[in-house]
Image (cartoon, rainbow, N blue to C red):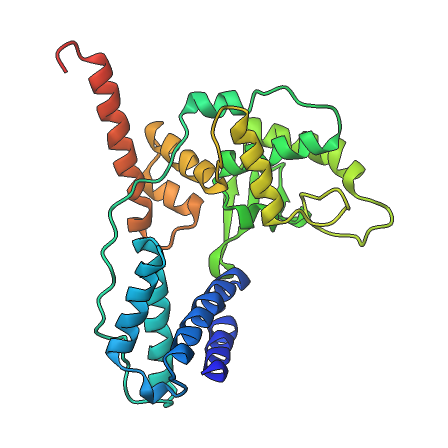
Amino acid sequence: MDELVREYLDYLRIERGSSPLTVEAYANDLRDYTAFLKGKGISGVDEIERGTVASFEADLFSRGYAASSIERRISVLKGFHRFLVREGYTRRNPADTLPLPKTPDRLPDVLSVEQVDEMLSQPLEPGPAPLRDRAILEVMYGCGLRVSECSGLDMSDTMLDEGYLRVVGKGGKERIAPIAGAALRALVVYLEQARPALAKPFAKPTAAVFLNARGGRLTRQGMHAIVADAGRTIGIANLHPHTLRHSFATHLLEGGADLRVIQEILGHSDISTTQIYTHVNRSHIRKEYLGAHPRA
């Protein structure tokens, strides 16, 4: 089973062009699955029955996983078993007819415009790191970037005179994201005043836009910590970078931007992914109505 998992991960990496983060997530899910199978005394793919996969799903529930997490894991197993059938390792797909667990519709967490303004108007401490952190927050919110996209920005991706960033998204897909206003100003200040100070002369040269204290590329984990710290300044615990992306999209929609334009900026391949923000927008309209109408 371990060898089959490695082949599937190679297929995702080489043929499907999946990102390293996606492959890592699939590897973790399949490692958990194969450990469960070994615990049941199953060593061959033809020994796996539909009930085996259903038992694994029940085991995930018993361990307290959320329905959304279980849905993702079962989807991974379905893809894995489809691969095994297609490559001729087995004739049966035991996960094929297993239904995915129902997950409740959940609107994304969004900051208000006032909360964003408060977070991004906090006084800065002296030194290059605060200028970098402010630029990261402004770029994430101002351009709708995922944390991995922000971390992956290289200097060659900044077309600031034209007002664009070249962004490499999921699956290596490239897109252009506009940058203007406060985000552009914060990034220019960082590049001119802070990045040269962070680029250590003894460190290995890097093309990364955002640098850590050692002069290397700032990681996703480092950016998570920066966003969480910024959230605490406005009384929000564990603020997630994706909340800034959700807020970006919601505020654009509330400001009158076309949904197709938002889809293109966010890099969504399917408009249905972007349409969740119309639900957020409707809830905003209802809130305004209830607060303003004398008989609401």
